[in-house]
Image (tube, rainbow, N blue to C red; front, side):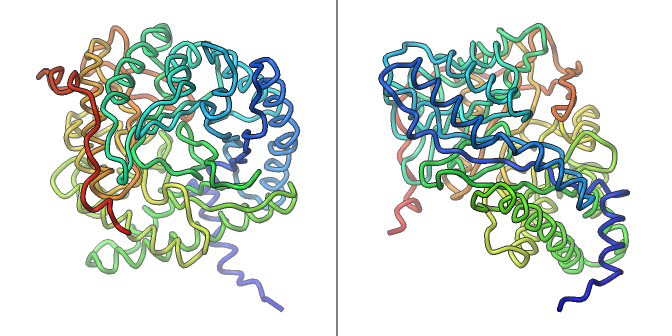
Amino acid sequence: MRFVDTAEVIETLHMIQVENLDIRTITMGISLLDCAAESGTEARRRIYDKVTRLAERLAPVGEAISQEFGIPIINKRVAVTPLALVAGACADERYVAFAETLDRAAKEIGVNFIGGFSALVHKGYTAGDRRLIASIPEALATTERVCSSVNVATTRAGINMDAVREMGEVIAQTAALTADRDGVGCAKLVVFANAAEDNPFMAGAFHGVGEPECCINVGVSGPGVVKRALEKVPEADLGVVAETIKRTAFKITRMGQLVAQEASRRLGVPFGIVDLSLAPTAAVGDSVAHILEEMGLERCGGPGSTAALALLNDAVKKGGLMATSYAGGLSGAFIPVSEDAGMIEAASAGVLSLEKLEAMTAVCSVGLDMIAIPGDTAPETIAAIIADEAAIGVTNHKTTAVRLIPAPGKAVGEMVEFGGLLGRAPVIGVSGLSSAGLIRRGGRIPAPTQGLRN
């Protein structure tokens, strides 16, 4: 018989009620490989039927668990097989109708996002990949809940610079088509290196081909909990800081695994992974930047920020791995500018530059995330930023990503408003130096020697 520790219960309640602890997302992964058909109409019918059948109870089960356990579950989402793999069997020249089908299915089952309008082109294109990527701007402009991602690089394959160049153009086109909403279509588009096949977080989630027919993945959160824990050790050395974060991450992850296993049981589908990532929001008290400042930085973005973030990321992973044997996804710390109150403050003050953010991405979970840049930024410059971030991921055997929003009509220092979890962000300056010559070369940057690990 297991006795309940009253102190642990009280502590967890305090984390939830005061420190913004929550389950950021329950994401159901669904394989659509058996939905492929020569007829696009038939494929879309199969997709709609399968998603609405398997995920029909996802949102109500999530709400029930939240009510019964007293744990906030912010988002219920679905991730599907990269659509380029499924739609490639049909003769349709454009895949916007597939995005519209996903959008209808998401609305029917009551999830806030559905990810997987995606392509994997790190070593080259199929015909389906080309059609899907060409459809992204219109698809994201005409749907509400569909998210898209494209993987352009891996450590084993190198960087597909033709795809990098094209994604620079796609991001610019998507911003233009959603100009009336500050380019918000780009907030639903991620360009990856070493994309994770079990990531539950949007906009980059998709259900990889190595995943089961259907599974439940959970993403936890809790930057506020970590910051409060550090407030209790204000004079401690950094070894104690790391231990404090590890213990806190353990508790957060335990809660995430509990919810994941309960959702798995009630829905009758396998439990996949718990993503350990600290996912911030623009709400006060829910910021990764403020954790770094609690460690002793005057402002996130100043000297020492990369070292502090490295400590945080490592300690979160170590604590989480003690709490679950099934960690996956991205697992670490996110630094999305528009979704983190401290990042917004630092960027608005001019302390947090694009170059500093790039340096910090070498040691955090993902990459240049939710960053607004001037709307007139050249597609070649966007592509060059993607290439830089992909190089960090490829060289360091880690997932990196770019989610840039060229804000139409906006200049450096102006604010863009996306609303909800997407938050708000000041427009950050981009170098005026041209990279067009490099980007026009195309081809593939070869894999680094450390990619050959057999």
